Length: 260
Image (cartoon, rainbow, N blue to C red; front, side, top):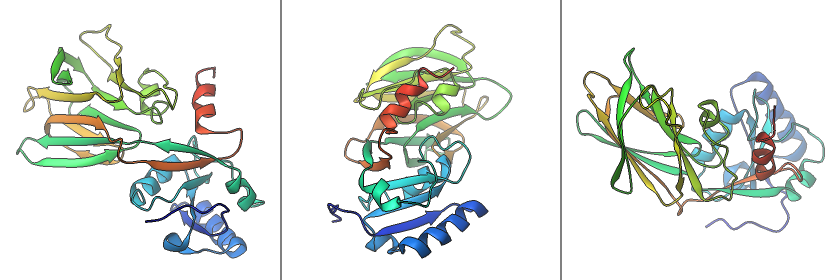
């Protein structure tokens, strides 16, 4: 079992396919050395938010913290890119602990698919027709029929991503709640979603699934033609991300609520 050491000196550099990320990896590895994932105390991810999610998924069992530097586009989950004083920045960094969602999706052939989501689990209509969903929380039907483009369940860390674009609430990282947000709700038109306890188990039943097919997506893992989807937080899994002092993930989520 990997145990963090008090002072970080050994790094592993991983980069997305973007040329600027690949070039950055080569320069940083030459300057600081590359211990490889197994020998490193911290993994440095070079890319954008999508690549950060890929690295978190791929190395969730290593217990090594991830320090990202933006060599992509948005970079909300990344630190600013700089090649100088990298070890000092990492050793002074603030840690964010992320608990992902688990998705269990059952498709039209009754096959079961399991996946993990760091940001959100989203249900999306596959055709021109609206989806029809029945939503239950902890086994109790809360919405008998939602006509919509889809719906999603977001973690606090993911609340500023797709959830925010769908007009869902921004959630402080330590709030211990999940966002349940409709995507372009048609009926009931005024329903704007709900905030749920992090212990809640959310179930979606797809109504008229043959006529109105729906896909389920856990971050970047998609299952098409689903008939049931069950979502819950996995408190047994913890992922650790590192952010520069004064630019913690908590601070970024808070600042996002005041952005104009």
